[in-house]
Image (cartoon, rainbow, N blue to C red; front, side, top):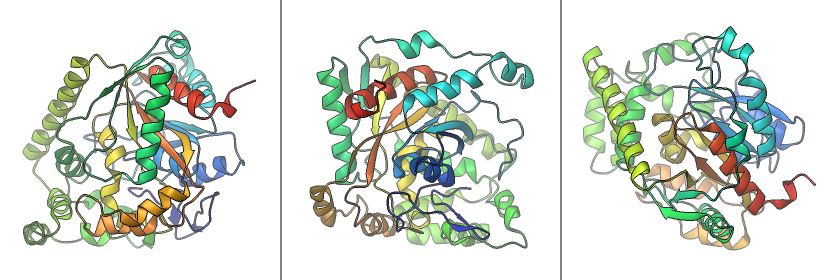
Length: 389
């Protein structure tokens, strides 16, 4: 629920199966921890800002966030009803990519299309997933918003080199206007009512610490949010921008925002098509942060939230683990802004040698099979021990 940690007041904190002092990621962290620990072969998660991909990355498993309406959401209880600017996705989580594909083969069937006619009747395209043609892959080492940790950068570069050696073409590519997409479009879309609907979930109830400062921030009056954003801008520009976007807006302003999201999506697709890309390789936040740290490092959602805003399918695949050298280099990590969020990332990722590291694989809307095909190729090259004998 708008958190990439995993805890609740009834059952307490979920722990990372690799190291109990680390977060399993969230909000689908229970599923991620169970699969990562070998307690389950397959599960389903939901993702509105990275909630399938964070636990998959932190727990060393695979996960796919499909295009928002590829899998039925009928019966799903959301935490904010009527919010359509940034939509939630339902997707599979498993120990290997083939299990994700198996899940989609089973779900994308006539029964689902009959039971939920609002889902486009697109069966699983086996010929796309099974293809072995060389791919034209865009990639970036950093989104220039959240500085990649040494292990994140190394994971992308090693994957890039392996893909090139296997005959694929790698092309530098970075979507435009990422700060605006995160601070204004995504945050503004999620909290266009100033957080009123979200706060209704907590009336007369406990608020779990994993949500960090989100609840008290949303409770700040509109005029005070604007004033605080103005005062914070010179010192903490990212936090000021997020705070400013959490103010309630009129119906007219909401429509303008939704139009801006549509224009942004079309501009990124145009960038993509101009380079004739098939898929995109990006960093994935990692290694896992300490328990209770994700709620204090909101800016680090940048690598995942972007693809919720764009509504592109995106999956994560583990490719390596944190080395002693990565750990030593992390001592010099300062982030791009040197603000509170960057400081939390630096401190909360210490003592992580041996923790899993993933990369993110992205495709255009409705191209889940191509995304999975790319994920399978990354898995084949980077973790050959997972391949069926």
